[in-house]
Length: 108
Image (cartoon, rainbow, N blue to C red; front, top):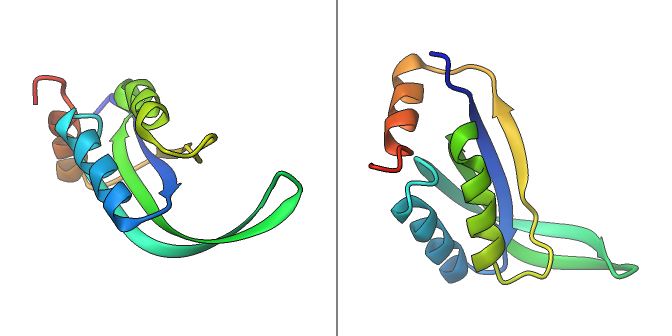
């Protein structure tokens, strides 16, 4: 397969917001799969250490759809500066990667 794949990571404050974001991402064919799990985040914000319960979203997509995915998250995410990180997928089961490609096709 010549197509390149990636995973995007973001965090969001609550389960309901995470589910809404995930459903919007999938509904717009910006990713094939979104997994979420609860995490406890520690980070510096405005010079202070913050401690927050958040939901971590692992979003599987293609490099071709990543730009639209990042734009979607930026628009619908409630944080001023959301975490959006892209990690390349350098390999995987060919059937899974084919499914990822077909699912993220704008035509569905």
